[in-house]
Length: 114
Ligand code: 5GP
Ligand code: ZN
Image (cartoon, rainbow, N blue to C red):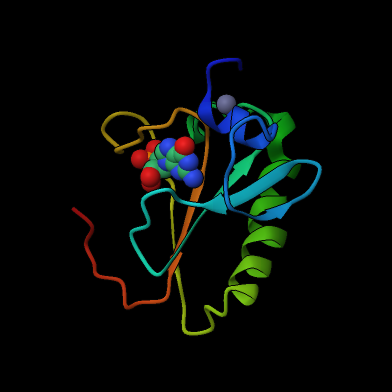
């Protein structure tokens, strides 16, 4: 999608601090980190949010959670734990309308979120 900031980051048209990239996924540091480690895991394909997942996205979704999350958690040394957040839609607090998984760690997380 031409006017989407995360599509532009995925395409390398907008700079970011990438920590992981393969054919289908890119992960980069959040511009405004909410924890000592705060990475956004983003499919390269433009999908607005999890409510817009299609059957054809099953492998991609599994890849993110089965392959990318554990790999990044290990590389970022989040052995004590971490939090995944997927804000979805207006009420969910989503501000960028391109699906992204927040990976947060490096401090004790509080619950519940606001
Ligand atoms: P959301 O609120 O949609 O769940 O999360 C969007 C996240 O993207 C926010 O944490 C925000 O700091 C981050 N963000 C927005 N624009 C950019 C950008 O241009 N570069 C990077 N690295 N992060 C961004
Ligand atoms: Zn996009």
